[in-house]
Image 1 (cartoon, rainbow, N blue to C red):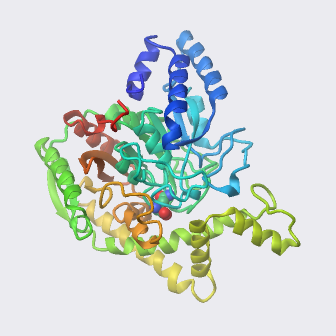
Image 2 (cartoon, protein in one colour):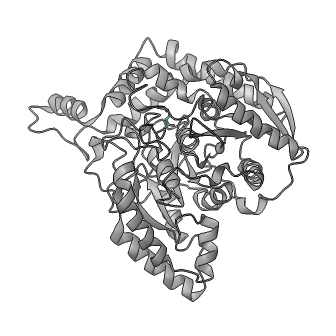
Image 3 (cartoon, protein in one colour):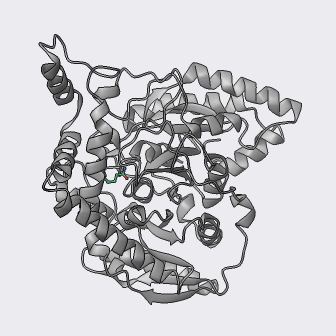
Length: 484
Ligand code: GLN
């Protein structure tokens, strides 16, 4: 049962091959027995899940079931869930029980989906390895001495270990695509503004975007159909109708123009990962696509620009955690200053504090123009590189990450080495473009991903390209050893 995809579950539930209560109960039991090892899910909502499954079964019996009725999912612990702790991986919010749902969660509820629990993540989504979570790291189901990627490592590991058929995740600089690549699952970061950010705890507001993770592109299409919506509560939500992503999966790839950026295949890319990505590109050629070498000349500037802009926005967003309104508060504050200082020193982990310090510095009077203003100019150049490229090509493809999953502790003491994990993913966030990762090979026994970048709001074309690739390859079907 745990190997069924979302599409298969929808079909089986509709045909009464099994009930939502059966699937939900089965996966809850599986989470209990397997997740002690992976630590992917930090809150299991057993009672709520069984109640929702029962309600879904009733609707299924009545024959008026919405699209995802009865399908169990896991949600990243960054999405506010009414009455269920939403910690964002931080001690600061360890006691936070939101009085409302994020729009994404509401959308899934309307669609009849069942929430199994909340997935582990890097603290406030800052990280590429899940090592910054207050709840301890998530282990990669492919190799438990390796990281699952981050920040959505809990979601990726849960899907890879078949604890859930799909999960929500968020991506500010690569946090959907990088863990998807490292755990061998399919993940999509939509165009900025496609999925509502309301109720999604903010890290860097101009970069954050929620999106789906599942084992197949077909399943990501089903999840995105539900996640994407115009939301008047999010001022950056784009008022544009949502296409039916599932309806476009079978278009032929003949004549598709694929841009291959030469900057994504240079120094730093592991040769075996490169080989796997090149083999995937050959598959596309065999299906009638045309490969065109392109240049994204400002790629090398993306990491430095991001590490000014993201911390700057984070320092402003995280100022609300001051021990006054909600979340962690230090014991016996002597005065207001002491309350602020100790609450934030005790409630935030090291990486979050580092980002707040960098961001505050970059935004301070006298440095704003030199750092933040400059980084915004570089961001414009990076965006223009893509605008130029998309005049000549329909999609851009390359590696998602420079190498497969790395060992715990190997980059933890070197922030810059960790930041370079996102060298191929960050520029799409800076440009606001959609990007996805699709499993395309196994290196040293661990999965690697092909990244597909699309033009604005061209998620349907990306999903089509990914689905066609998954029709002729089996990488997305491979399970970690011991998980079958
Ligand atoms: N790894 C990047 C960072 O640490 C991106 C994280 C994300 O996309 N949320 O900021």
